[in-house]
Amino acid sequence: MREYLAAPRPGLDLRQHYGHHQSPAIRAGGLIFCSGMLPVDPETGERRHGTLTSEAHVIFGNLKLLLGSAGSSLDRLAQVHALIYDSIEYDVLNRVYRQYVASGPPARTVWAVQIEAGFKVQIDAVAAA
Amino acid sequence: MSVRRKIVSSPHDARGVGTSAAASEAVRGGDFLFVSGLTATDPQSGMRMPGTTASETRQILSNLKQLLKRAGSSFDKIVKVNVLLHSMLEAPNMNEVHVQFFPDPPPARTVCGARLPDGMKVMIECTALA
Image (cartoon, rainbow over all chains, first blue to last red; front, top):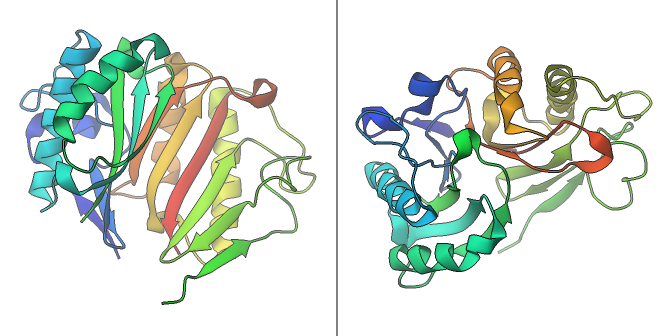
């Protein structure tokens, strides 16, 4: 079965704040599929633009809240797509990324793409439920 | 433990002419159905149908609906959608069409801007429960 996972904090419901037609996360087949996580304030939904590093800190904080509310955690991440605005920041991404997946990091692909609203990073994750 | 992997084939490939040999339209693995990135094509001829972001999105989702049906799945079983757009400025135009196609609650989704083949404006891939 496919199970809707609600936003654990009001700011993390991007559908409500920005009209994105997506659920925060879906649980199915023993996995949790998260919508692309953005650096928004978890309480207000306000965009938190900054450096790639500061944006990544906000994103991982939000991802931790989302996975935690679903009984999972950052330690249970299986696959991550890290989207960054320019591959020149690859090393910067790794420096901050490492802090959140200290032991046994998940499979990962880094894409240099255009991210909404001029953000510098977006994290797309699948975790074990 | 046996690993189930099954190719989902179709009479008219929804990904366009010339790609048939390189990728399956969809592959079932375990509980999931993994669908290749689709661009706007005519389901009969397989020819690409370039248009606006909205028209391409509509065409892709119509084709996806048929594809899922053939594979024994459906829109309400989609768990994750990845959308690639030629420009993120067009995201609202894609989103409006999604509202018409996807059920409530919608699947999880990630949208990004990328360079797509043959000047197409939209590509959509998804994972669904089989």
